Image (cartoon, rainbow, N blue to C red; front, top):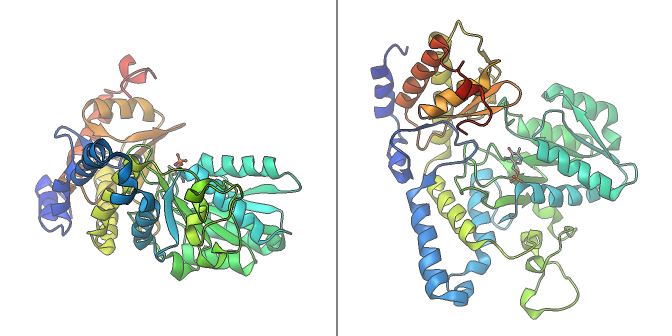
Length: 417
Ligand SMILES: *Cc1c(COP(=O)(O)O)cnc(C)c1O
């Protein structure tokens, strides 16, 4: 039972991940509850980037493509991410943005079952996933269609049962960006396969925060984001996973020279590289890739079971404190209360979500809003303390009680952030 701030201090003392906080650059006057949107900066990442800029670029110039092995950074970083998502070496590359990787993955996924004309996704999926599917359909034409269903395992299974023979691809985000609801990846992948469809998983809100077993689930394709729980920095490269069984069967549509078998022979005809390397397109963004690689290395030092355990506990404690101290306000938790099927953020509905969040940010409690009326709080187990939750909830309670948010400066959309 959590009654006092001391109870939370005790949880921090017993936290087996507590040493990790010192590995991050965190402003002293901020409680950062937005690591699910932009992960914080690890100290080693700052140092790695400085080294790449000063020594590898500044001093060694173009030689660093070989001497610092810049050229294999996408594969090397991909292998490190693979260890976080249950993929094998040589099945993941870091490259481009999640949106671009979705385009590649979906394009290839559609070619697995050329006779089937439906892409199934979820109505409230992250917009870029739906937009990329729409763009690809507009480009390919024919009778391709995007079919959007409710976001429950049951709704998906129903559509797979009814229209399975027409469904080529199922495109889903593992952990929902607002509700944090988590799909049962094994069950949904098996249901897609039973209908003869392939599946593309978007792991943007899961990679680095929850155990993922792409091999164990027999997943076909996956993409994900580098700047959220992977802490790769703003606009970090994303990643793409393709199951080995498809590597040599298909080429992807953005067939740039870095995905060619012999880019430095400058030949006129494209020949896809062997393996996952063919999913590269252009030159890797070396500085950004170095940041992502260093940050992923840090996550790999923490046992994933410990990350997951603390992530669930942080959310549970936050919910309990909010229930207790912010109970009679017009707040509604829309995320699952069952930690087993929840990611590492929580969304609360409130009609004044925007000004409330502005008031919180003004006092150093950083979360974010998603329209029309959601406040979202993310919980990063490697750098958040339990006492931070106490301090954040006490402040939220105060803002609600005093209606401090109901001031023009917080209501104006031009203010604060
Ligand atoms: C954040 C996020 C993205 C980001 O896409 P980018 O192209 O890298 O900007 C994609 N999908 C989901 C589900 C996300 O949460």
